[in-house]
Length: 114
Length: 113
Figure 1 (cartoon, rainbow over the protein chains, first blue to last red):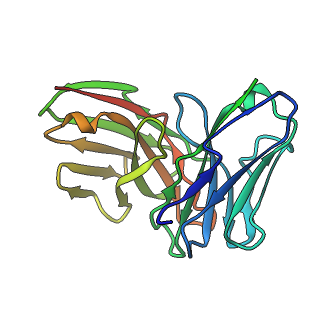
Figure 2 (figure 1 turned 180 degrees about the horizontal axis):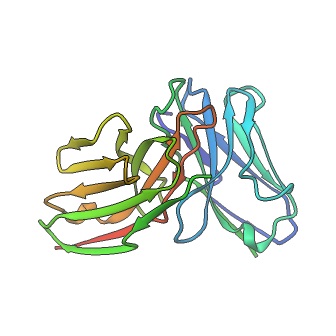
């Protein structure tokens, strides 16, 4: 596809359940970012990959959050033992090799923990 | 770390009027300032960006200004149309390997027909 694709679009999880969110970046984009967007707020940085290397995970809120991009393309954000405060939209963005090139965002996955 | 403040949080204008949204940033090392438009149920979409070596940039009805000394930048939309109604976010980043964006809290723009 032409844009960043995220799946599922919506996910309802029971508290304590593990979830996995998928991001397919634009083909050829080396940089991939995950952001968390709470209702009515701006996106907040979670983690950054350059190809398969996770160069920054300083935004991950706890050790229950884990992200991977094993082949430098598709990425998965995993949240273990979900809690209500994890409810948010999780956005994935990708960009090209050059610094400060445009970051293209996917439509996000809305996670609701009940 | 970087902190980006955005004002106002909501803005209502009449169709055809201009809209201005302002942001300030804290880290003088930031040098890239994009603006995103987010419609309901969609991801943010870049509408214009500016780098620190430029003071102003214009694209049709949209313009952005940057004052590095004061560490603030603004989005100007002229001749607003109902389809401009959305949430707008400013952001800032540094030219480092991390390159993550720090976003403002957003401005909900409503253009009244």
